[in-house]
Image (cartoon, rainbow, N blue to C red; front, top):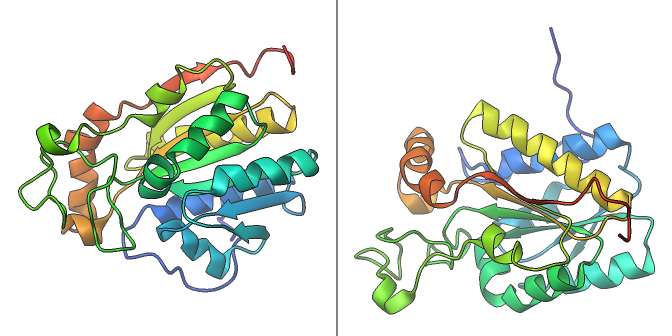
Length: 250
């Protein structure tokens, strides 16, 4: 029987995430892959503002806390000056797809050789549950109390689909963390993205569909069902770009 061991990348302290939040699972997957690749001493986690910033409390590896939305810009400078390091950002939807939209689009368009891990729970989790760029049509938030209306607030942004229109990215994929298959696929996708970066293949992007029991006003189990019936049909999991088999620099 396999025995789970705490990753060396996670401090021996309680999680700061709300009960049932899949951010903690995403963090575990990232840390397990880093351990598997033997990159613990070589990795650097660029942490932006949002629930992802709780990693500042218990991430054991090297990390850099940056301003809201600016993780891709900071990661660009770090990777260019330390090209041998495994550099990745960990960002939420409010951070990446709102205030940080210009940064993520520009870094992807340049094909910067780092990895973005994008946790999409369709809400501003840390600041009170406001509407995010990825909030679903009809989804209620503190700023869309009757449900998101595309006539006044536009449509949810599909970041994998948007970034896949650019020429430079090497790998773009989306996975859902609400079921065992999605978790296994996500782990493999994160590993593939990291390996592509270490091989110098260019920009890699992994979107993880997550939940927010607190701001969705649901139990953890209810959020998993909600993801099946609402989140996944709109944000379809899959690989949207894979050029990792091409020669570096091709």
